[in-house]
Amino acid sequence: MIALLVTFLTAVFILFAGIQKQESQFKNITFLLLLFGGSLALIESQGIINLEPFFGKILEGYMGKEPMLEFGLFRLMAVAIITLIAAFIIALMPATNRKGSDILALMLFSLCGAQMMIGSNHLVMLFLGIEILSIPLYVLSGSDKENLFSNESAIKYFIMGSFSTAILLLGSAFIYGGTGTFYFSDINVKLSFAAHFGEFPILIKLGLVLTLVGLLFKISAVPFHFWSPDVYEGAPNRVASFMAIIVKIAGFIALAQFIQNFSWMQGWYNQFLIPISMITILLGNIAALVQKTVKRTLAYSSISHAGYLLMFVIAPFGTANMWIIGTYALAYGLGTSLLFYFMDKYSLESQTSETSKGFDIFNGMFYKNKRESIIFTVAILSVAGIPSTIGFVAKFHLFRHSFEGSTLLTIVALIGSAISIAYYFKPFKNIYSSEFSVESTTSNSINWIALFMSIVIIALGFAPMFLTHGLLQ
Image 1 (cartoon, rainbow, N blue to C red):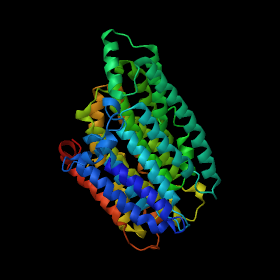
Image 2 (cartoon, helix red, strand yellow):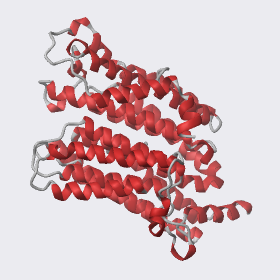
Image 3 (spheres, one colour):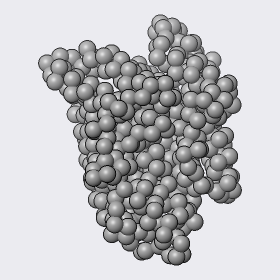
Image 4 (cartoon, rainbow, N blue to C red):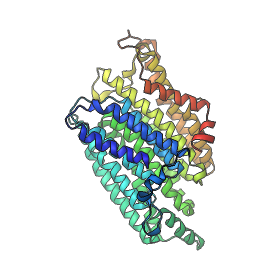
């Protein structure tokens, strides 16, 4: 709850304080305040401090009911992860010199929605979280007014997002009609009675399918992925990075916590979730393999990660093994945010047009800036799942967990991971090949935030026990 409060107050402050000032003046204070809020949530998730008494009245349920917004230890950890990753994205990506800090404020308001989705314990609160997450993104995806692709992405995202929200609301209404409640825990109890009699009402089945459609849209899983590449390509780089990481992590954790209460129906919903996960993994990786631009490659890569994330809910899961998805979220967030950072930086330095930013933007990177090329390599190795990185640790535990639910799905995921290496390793030809060696045109300076993130990736790759039996357990 503390991270949500800090994020909201920071958003309000910079929105009004930055009306007549340059956005770049508020970049550092935004980063520091998010770092503060995320760190407090991280500390609280470890049981070192307990801030819940300060929010007792806010979190109290209505008429003796449990609260609609609840932050247990894992949820606090998940909130800490997305808050800290959002802080890193803001710190890594350059701010503009335009007047007004509305873009930063909108990103923070969207982050508030992501935090509410993670903490939601009620279908209405889940819906509110999704809307608070989405509405600022409709504006942000079209914030580059001089780019026609940005305007197109905003229209596409708004139209498709509106349809998915309507479908999710219809699903919620059906679930309420079948169970008589919006509370997740009460839904679980009602389904336990239905499971005892061996049949689930058709309203609940329809409600679950329609609600999942809305949530699968947010994580851009096939066949609800078609908006993703175009929206990511048209949106400004920092917004695309935010959408690919924060929205996907929050959307999936919300999906996992929601569907956990339908575990009585797992045999039924696995019949369509397993094929969706398989197709998402294969289509995302194969489509990424044939892309010519870096941004669309990352967009399709994020689609494939939606398929990997879905593997988690295929096998039985509960509070005891939620750390697996926390590990994957952390690995994905660290690695992907670094990839977007380097894509953005070297796109700005490149002389090619905005619509043709291919892998040649990294030509001679090793000879321009050796330190950054090493950090970039670490990020690539992590998202590809190469050993000695946190990405490998995350995939190993996720695949091991998925094997209990579907052996075939795990095999498909391994094939998808093998395919992904082909496009993740594409930049190496440009970075290190002497064919592209050029005289250094930039200083061998280093971004200390990027260096810190790469150290975390390697450190947690060499010491996975810190994650599996410490921080996230």
